Figure 1: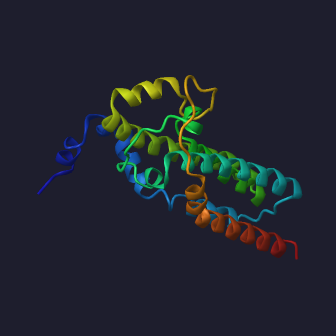
Figure 2: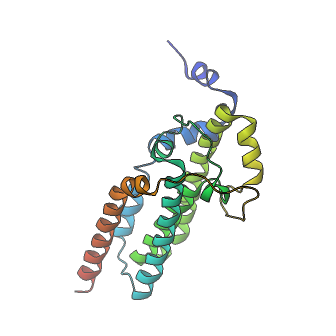
Length: 207
């Protein structure tokens, strides 16, 4: 019988770090991480304002544009399974920032906080998502370091993790925009469901 310590010792060196191991657990459950957040914003007795809907909608649109650019460059398999990585994507939006999908996700969820009107919840939401994504990225970066070694370390040294900056070097490469749009259809339905839920909540509180 394999003990937990034996299992850890079998991991490649970068993946033995505590943050990477915790991030690996969160990575496997990352699709469910926003669920408590959504439930809480729906239960809070707050109503969205016209300004909140406009600002939140713009932030959601910007976040989704970043997500689409990331998926178009990296492909859907790379997005869903961190270990099934055939190539290191360093062009397109990945030349600006190392984790564009998570940057996009963060903006999307902050946009929905603005739409919900739960502004008092915003600092908590920022801290929650920042912690979750920091741990998940620690895992993903350890995996990429294991697979690509010096090539990834060089990319990591020149490209910021969270705050985009002008790329150094070539930033062009193949993008499959049709595949990206198809893969995001379920995400668009989730947005529609959330908008409908917040609209119903607002109408209910207005009575």
